[in-house]
Image (tube, rainbow, N blue to C red; front, side, top):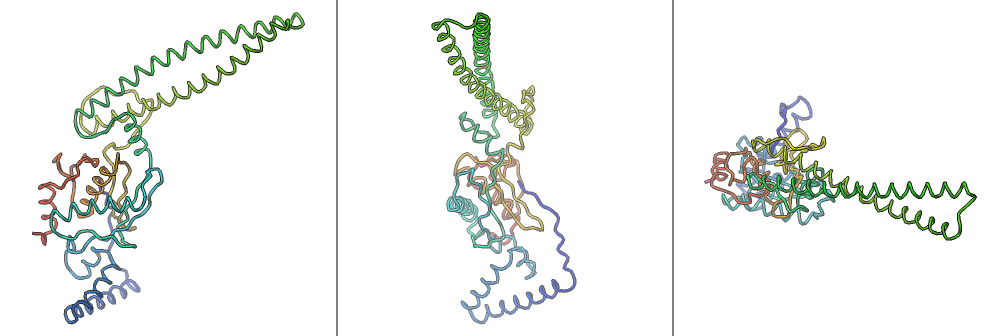
Length: 339
């Protein structure tokens, strides 16, 4: 998914205008040096290229920069919840960039220490939901079969929860009965100025047993609470998935739980603050590369399409990991310089 915020590129009078004029003069000089001095000039041009973004360079040179200059990127924020190192992220990014580059035979992306396109992994509820589904052996894609598996898992979890809750209720009733009997016996013996040694020992053992049982019941209650939270969360995921896939089903009880767009595994953003790719959820390293490939498409200027096999499919969560003819045609339309 991509988000654009309007950018006011009107240059203000004063320092900014002078800077642009100077930069244009420098660029013109470097282009002249490239033509006259060969390799040395190319190095100078490469140095300048790394100081501004590809789009800014294109504007300054008066040409459409789409696919003419590599998009410069660098690793940004990586939340520890993903258990992914910077090196692993860079490997996933390289894999994603190569898919696009091999499809058109052109260098499209380049890593630099200060690359303006920041790529980060943001850990929030979306990855927690993905982790929960993974523990259940579930994944989400755009297929009806995937949706049916979610429904079956919900029904199974709910049925198992009802059995456990019923059993827990019986244990609570037995505990309360034993506690009431103990309190009654203690009260009765206290009125008689104390119990015989054997009876006192029995009552002490019963009290210790009930204290131990109380702790066990508290732990069991906590597990049941977590289970119902997972069930409600799964219900919310099913409701949201049905909405996005346009599947008509009765709404599942979510206990007030809500989820974000279940197919928004990542986002590409471009605004006055810069350009960013944030990845929010993925099942494994291959899915991470798939999400990055999709977001790279947005960085190249591509929109979503309705081809389920395309990397730019609107519901792609990273499960599509190949560039299709549809993607290549869209990119060549966006970048006329590509053959």
